[in-house]
Length: 492
Image (cartoon, rainbow, N blue to C red; front, side):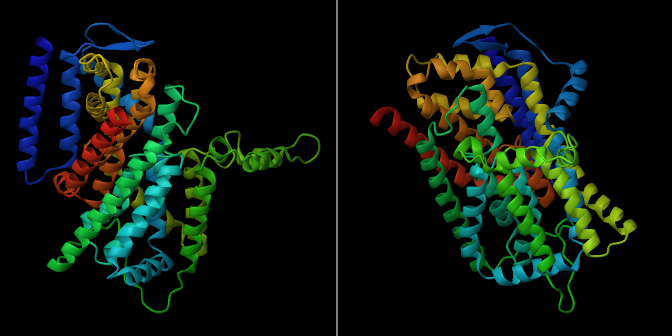
């Protein structure tokens, strides 16, 4: 009873803070993630922690976090996402340089002119492309390379900023709902569950993913048509996406080459060719290249590429850092940018990413709170114990709540994996899909999603505005998920 009262008090205080934030004229994103962290820290004071081992839960009492734990939380938060932080900052520097070139500006203007008035086509093609790529790529973060470019095009084509956010960042997040072969969340989730067959639950994921894509496209088409009738143009005024007017006949092919190269590199580097499709050509090529030597043992390419170089299909986010730095320098040389201007432009883009990156990092501090005091294991054990048999509704709700506090889906598998693979063995493929989809829904709507907060910050969109945009789709997908789980559990 004491735990229940404690949880009610924490949620009541959090609801009061959320109400104040909603009424505030400056409803900043930091306030929303701060409320989430407040809830997590307070819950460590009222909920015991523990671990599952071979399907049995072992409680170890209370592990309350206090003021002295703040440095540890910050340290490990940075530690877990440092590579991605560096990548995002370098991405800002890349666009700081590229966006100053006339070729890039001309390309954005030409694409915007071509897409203006073709909202329905964009609402179909862009989600299909981004959702599909997210579903198969090893990590969705690499797709952020194209998002500022796409956002600039859509804004210049007179799309409103919320729809633009949805068609770009939103499409990537929809792709995490039911990933097929890709996303780092699915990879680590399978890893901690000891799942070696990537096709486990593939049919379920394809059905959920297909429905999600169709609903998302339909919703955005409806929104675009509705806004067109109202003749409203809510264009974002942000220097991050600002494009100067291009005078004269400027060739855009240099920028086309740059983005075409990045696209090809991402497809080659971040699709699991060997692990998922049994294609060993890239692995064999990498081994051949790195073993080429001058003389007896001077393997020149292995030295040039470095000791951490891997084959296409096995690359991490760190590889994108190197590529972006190289391409940024090449673009500067192609456009004869002075060294001083290059440094200034790169620094300017770098600085524009600081707030979005800070928000992204803070989502991981929330994860560290749950990591240091894993209270969600206790909550999961209590929820699973409410029924003797598998209950898809309790499982879905538990997965959703767990995902709010776990920015890392792999950690969820680490915490509850043993009970999922033992007690739910007969429904394991469905449980696998429910957890993955619930995690994707959380990433779309709750201010504990790194990509979501990053996107909202770069586009200067308030969280309330985003939630007003996305809640109908979320409710529809939740209904779809529960109906699907009901059919699979009780009808098949």
